[in-house]
Amino acid sequence: MARARGQVRGDPNIQGEEIGRINGRGACGVESAVRIKSVADVRMIPQPTVGCRTASALWPWVVNGAKPAVGSAGGGIASMGVVSHYADRNWNSAASGWLFEHAFGRAIDIAGIKLKSGREITVLRGWNTAGDGARLRKMWRAACGLFGTVLGPEANRFHADHFHFDTARYRSGSYCR
Image (cartoon, rainbow, N blue to C red; front, side, top):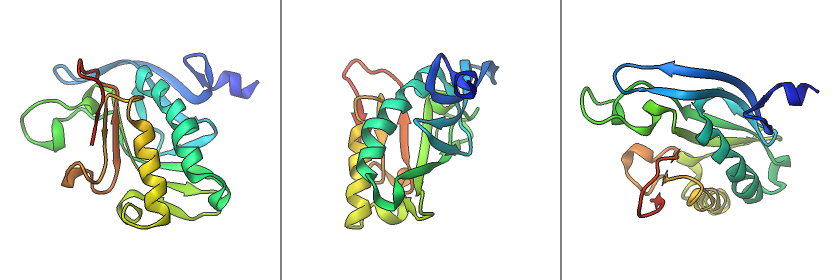
């Protein structure tokens, strides 16, 4: 019963609360914002605010990408460390320039995961290691196609410590780097 009460957009696999419209400066804002507590029983810390399409894309990534990449190591995934979600600002926090997908609730940045054992796997420290690097690369690859843009440590210096996933749509298909 509690699971049904906490579901987002009618999906019991995504727990949180529906916020509705968020008005931002200028073109910023989110039409149907949600705050996510967990996806497929994996807690999101802190709880991100994103649009419905981004929330919906997270579920197949967690279930088919993140969880299989970790497997039973450390008892499995307990939570994910979110470092950015909806933010009313320009790309890379520049004083001027174009708005990035975070400004519309279409993006989320994840820096790492915490296992049930308490051990953390971070993008910054784990990307170039043998065991965790393979897991992180598998997670990154699994996001390609589910999200419009998937960026990680090899994309540029701004993504050295996290994955950026957004649901922007491109005629040429997903951009994964």
